Image (cartoon, rainbow, N blue to C red; front, side, top):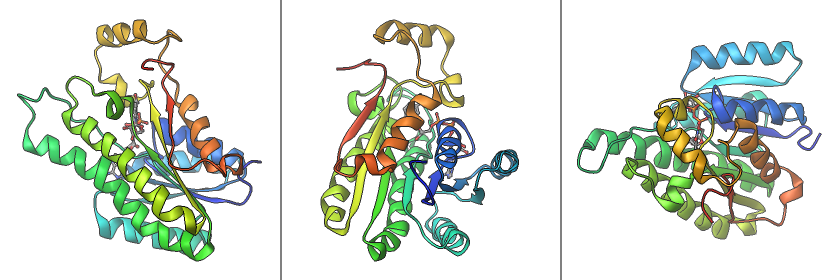
Length: 246
Ligand code: NAI
């Protein structure tokens, strides 16, 4: 029960890593606001989790849209009364080589993966400041740290997430708010399901642990950064990538 009675918003919680984190957080005693664009999947998952006795609610949100984020945060506070933890996990890819990437592809990824993180943090932080306590976890990526072919837009957004994490760690530390990032490596979700198997096999040969990540590998890193065990960790980027890059 490492998160007993803590209220956590997990964006992108309907699928993949976010869903795994929602389950793990709820099993550790948290009240989880599963916030996602995908209402059909999100609501279905929440029903399943409630049947297991977990305290999880679905809130639809488009993190790229500020008014949608404001409404989601307001709804969460109305339902759960407070917010202790924000996991900025929602993300998309629109891959193409630089020479072929459209302005739209560039913009869509920046809107969700960068502005979405800004929108959610800005909407949630006033509640945490009032409490004098809070944990924000931003999801970066191995691509944001080292770059990746076909991911100009994604790598730019994920590198910027690290910049924002460090800035907020400096701005909000004195308010009792810890801000950290997790940089997952290649992880088995619908996101990597789009990558050709041949490419994934090549990637695996570069990983010292010789396998892709599982959503739970990343969810446990979120859990650590959300729990009191990480109270003196601030502004860090936790690499959870099997050691693909060192
Ligand atoms: P996923 O595609 O399985 O899940 C992403 C979730 O975000 C989906 O439920 C989707 O509906 C939601 N979402 C997308 N756009 C949204 C929006 N505008 N507003 C609200 N929700 C939205 O992806 P996965 O793999 O679970 O990714 C989670 C995070 O981890 C993302 O930030 C991703 O960039 C990051 N990541 C993933 C890696 C991987 O290999 N899977 C590697 C490194 C980072």
